[in-house]
Image (tube, rainbow, N blue to C red; front, side, top):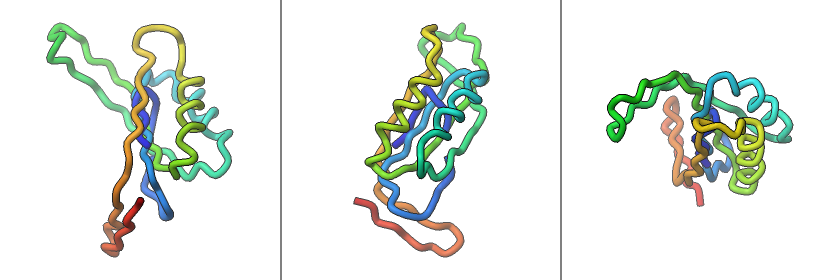
Length: 118
């Protein structure tokens, strides 16, 4: 599951079915991480600072946003999405977006080990 509109995680062992990735305002990070911390069994979260550029609105001034990537089992996706949505919400434009993306396979760089996920 990928959650965009929120913030993201690192690769972990196990049956990872979805990646959650999100982009949202950087000042919301502590609240979102506190919400995610409430989810029992959440493996890890990768946090990155990112900038977006618009080809539709060339006068758009890019701002630094926070991106979270979280890889979790499929059954955990609804709880992760709900936590990010609840804790990143301000009600203002620019709250961000959450993307849920399926993961078909992972490859461990060090060993070349592959996990085929279904």
